[in-house]
Image 1 (tube, one colour):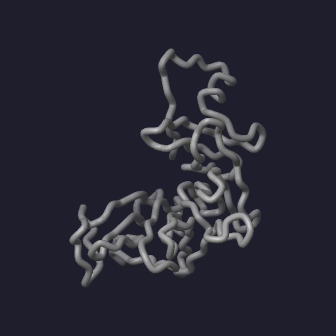
Image 2 (cartoon, rainbow, N blue to C red):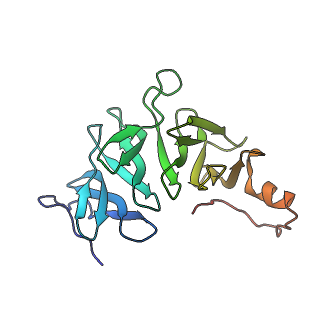
Length: 211
């Protein structure tokens, strides 16, 4: 089913890409195009395609939506071109969750994982090269990275916020799947699985975990 485009926009660079759906399939999010500028969109069957807006002067993208459709996460491009971890609420409010005057002045990063009710989110803090989790009650917690790999990204987070999965590294330079738990911290998924007694076949390489 095609979901169309915004009235008055042109698709010179492409028509857009869906990134995720709410649990009931009634809210879709992704990246749309107006000429060669990208915007984060929300789609509903009754309201059609909606530009979520952005705080920066350039592009934005919606990577995920909570299961109940109330919270959307992704990135909003800063004036210098850096991606900034962004959340869009149902009332239209946008916040940059990683913005901190000391540790991350721009709020550089991306939101990827969102719990079913929108309480918890996860992603990557690109300023510090670490995965993170966040809630309105607790704020940002950096979860670390894996030695030998460039950066770490939390792609999904459990509904209670106590488990984050994702990957460390970058494409074409080496990736490894990761898992973080409150009890054990951050580790490669292969080590986690081995610790539970699973035998990993020789040559098997776990690269990415997500929901």
